[in-house]
Image (cartoon, rainbow, N blue to C red; front, top):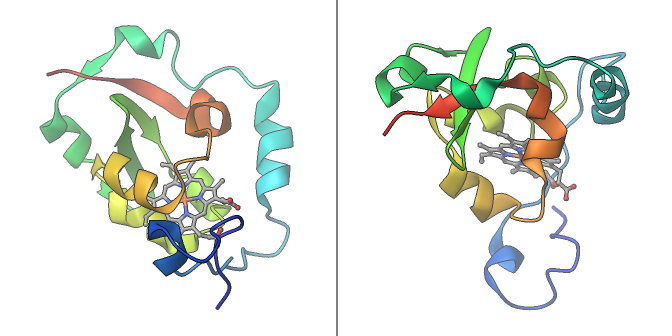
Length: 124
Ligand code: HEM
């Protein structure tokens, strides 16, 4: 088991397991980034589309998986296939993953990585 880069000898990150998981043949996060970089978002103007937590909860399957991150809602079905933390991302399926996300990798720029998969924002 390896430790977080820069976790040093103390702090909360030092206690978390940091194992990269293999992805399916032909898949990689960098390929995902290359392929989605020039892509249009799967939804136009997702910041104008509102969903309640109950509506997000309907997308709680591995082949239809939405999550809430910092008030924005993303379809993570495709990204999950290349997520460096593997299936753990599904702990956030159908719900708000912000807390888990910040626990494991507060430095990751989720909006940049999966912005094209934003489907809406949370209706409060
Ligand atoms: C929703 C969007 C998410 C995105 C865009 C995302 C993205 C990423 C990225 C880029 C890494 C690599 C970090 C690095 O190398 O420094 C990573 C690793 C990881 N993620 Fe996520 N993640 C998401 C959600 C989650 C959730 C909900 C969990 C739940 C526990 C999780 C658990 C992990 C774990 C355990 C790793 C560790 C792999 C390693 O050792 O680096 N992630 N994730």
